[in-house]
Length: 70
Image (cartoon, rainbow, N blue to C red; front, side):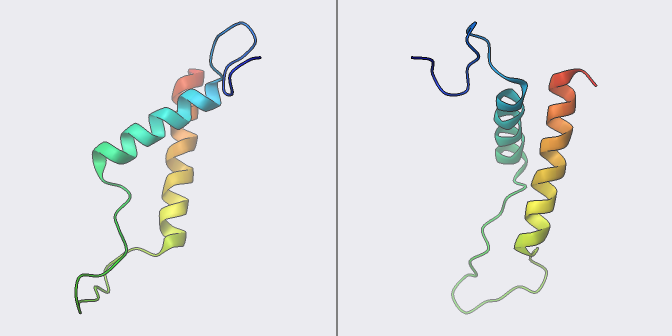
């Protein structure tokens, strides 16, 4: 049985590689920040979940383009 994320010939799909690249970039740059406030403090400058999703989708698109050589 083939492993998930691997093509039959053993190579990985571009989408899977782009996702790993997205995870690496997001983790090392701190793009995703926790939204839970500290004890009694609520920051109004925090980004909305929708904004974070849009940032991640844009980053994934860039990562996929890089992996595909575009």
